[in-house]
Structures are given as C-alpha cells and as structure tokens.
Image (cartoon, rainbow, N blue to C red):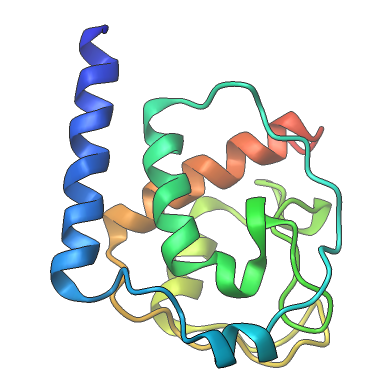
Length: 144
C-alpha cells in the first residue's frame, strides 16, 4: 500500500469515526428518506478511481448530501438538483459557492425545489473534500 493511499485510508477512518462519534453519521430516518426520494435526474458515469481527497469527499457526501442530491450527485426528481450538471461547472459555481451553500443554505434560483437549508454539522474541511468528489464526478461526465 502506497504512502498516500495509507494516509487517505487513515483520514477516511478518522472522518467516519468523527461522524459516528458526533452522531452526525446516523442513517436518515427511513420514513423521511422514503418521503424524500425520487428517481435520479441524470445518469452519472463514475470514474474507476478517485483521488484520496475525493474518496474522503465521497464518504462525507454520502452522509451529508446524498439523502437530497442523490447517489453520485445525480439529483432526485422532486427533491434536489443534480450537482453533476452544467449549471454547477466551476466557471459558474466556484468551489466557494459550495461552501457558502453548505454554511448558509441557498435561496432557490436555478431549480424549482425550494430553498436549500444549511447543512448541519459539516465543516469547511468536509466541504472541501465533498467538492473534490463532485468536481471529479463532473470531469468524468464532461463538465469542466
């Protein structure tokens, strides 16, 4: 196992432990998840490999974002938009936009899903890793 892989695995384990310890990693209530699910809005090609940061971001995304934005950021019809979409390309929504959205929420402006609330319990570091994951998904799907 390479040095960077070992570091990534250790960070991933710590991140997972942090979610468990804080109670933030709990699986969403089944009734809520059932009420808030819809079909994926886009087909997302997932890269065969992700960078270490994107691997960590994927885990954080699955805990904090996927309940609304869907698996692999494909969106959920009637729930939340796909982040693997031209609207969220770096030249239109820079990395800082994701941080602000997570911290402050977002007033609906591109989609008709309603306002996005702030994401509780997510740190700036978490968002940085989540953005790494989303950007790698975007690149794999021709969004640069």
